[in-house]
Amino acid sequence: MTAVITTAAGIARGVRSGEYPAARVLEEYLARIAAHEDRIGAFLLVAQERARAAAEAIDARVAAGEDPGLLAGVPLAVKDALCLAGLPTTAGSKILQGWHPPYTATAVARLEEAGAVVVGKTNLDEFAMGSSNENSAYKVCRNPRGLDRVPGGSSGGSAAAVAAGFASVAIGSDTGGSIRQPASLCGVVGMKPTYGRVSRYGLIAFASSLDQIGPLAGTVEDAALVYQSMAGADPMDATSIPGDLPDVLSGVKEGREAGIAGMRVALVTELCEMEGTDPTVARVFEETVKKLEKSGAVLVEVSVPSLVHALSAYYLIAPAECSSNLARFDGVRFGLREAGDDVEAMNRATREAGFGPEVKRRIMLGTYALSSGYIDAYYGKAQRIRTLVIRDLEAAFTQADVLLSPTSPTVAFPLGARTDDPMSMYISDICTIPANLAGIPALSLPCGTDDAGLPVGLQVMAPVLSESLLFRVACAAETLIGALPPVLL
Amino acid sequence: MSISREDVLHVAKLARLALSEEEISLFTVQLGDILNHAAAACALDTEGVPPTAHPVPIAHLLREDEPRPSLARGLVLEEAPAVEADRFRVPRILDET
Image (cartoon, chains in turn purple, orange):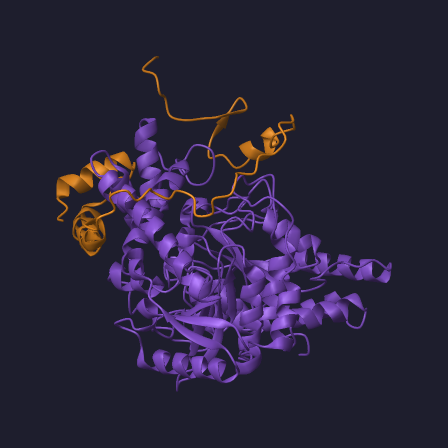
């Protein structure tokens, strides 16, 4: 078991130099999946044979003197909301059971071009709607660091796969915290780029003005490697940011070597003094902040008053966009069809049978918020609050380089604890939602554990397009705190 | 803000969902709860504040307007629930015999 406990950067170095073959690395991960996946439920599909062929192709390139890329031979798990031609994609929903996408997401294609080996498609909340992975239509996913606990969501399978050592790195999508919150709960690094940094082409849309693809990994450097390999302009996504992609790997190096001294880091009052924050989370967060201050970070406190309304704004905007995006699931062109006497009856029967309760709830809420007579009072109001959040965060970034908060107000909660009350589940996202509303990059890294060994996450937020700064601060923090290795079940 | 059973039925019709009796009752309560939670936000004075639809104010990326092949018809139709004569088949729309 050498590859599993090393980093993606280490695996790629070993594979590129010919020191250890990609095929051998892959077998170590596949062996772990075979031994432990039935207890975790991280994957909806393990693509063994396809992965073996990909790893052999990498080794052949190395043998031929070629360089397969930054992620040569690195086992990658892909959230099942991203299309990969040749493998079924379900988005965690019965309505897409058995569907084979006719094309591959740009992010996945770029990672494969950089040498990553896709090991499988990971479990998720249906259509990425949820904070515990319990809305998956297929199976339960458990937190590898506490098997009676949720892994978080919606990219729960991706976070669990990295935490359990089933893949070296993973990708997920983050609409309101769906990468960072499960990363926090599973004790891995998870990062949401600036809106538009990573192409959304081939990501099954949930809320198009909020969705962003990002990495999950064991270390900040590994997350940066995945980000660097998949980000950048894409003509297939009109919202992707044009121009050259700045190098973030130098930011990682700077963070490791120069540390955090002189950086102005701000505590966001509204997120740090929130009602309902677990005392252990508050304590671990405070201790972490003290460590940063001791090593030279300049601590400031900022207030972002509009954040008290961010959760409400998000839970109007995201359902509104979801109700529009999910209108395409009509039983005509792909996926499930249930019989009906006319087209409308067929649409209704198909959607009733194919969607789970949370997806229906959000379609209903979003349709209501967009309906005649209510659109200005709900959707329009939420979009104006979004402007206030952006303005307030811009003001906060004049006082500080980065903003800090806990990623989640609690550690991983027990399976089933919040499934009866949608509001109690939605509150899980309270610290992560502001970055989506404002489009800014944000990252969660493990900063300690509670007495039972359940991880606490530190969230770092940076201004729009400041990924390099984000990775720099995160890497400096990780160097002080220490990375959390995968669980060897 | 309270949501009535009629509101739920109306929205379900707009959203093309054939909800069960149980779902109608559940959503009547839950949608009301969620909207109540948003009441303070909705009461906020946002006079003169413009709405945000896109968080990063950068010109949209347009690709060159060049003709190129679309997805292969066979590949797409293979995934359709019902196909007839190279087209998506749906229940009868026009009332003809």
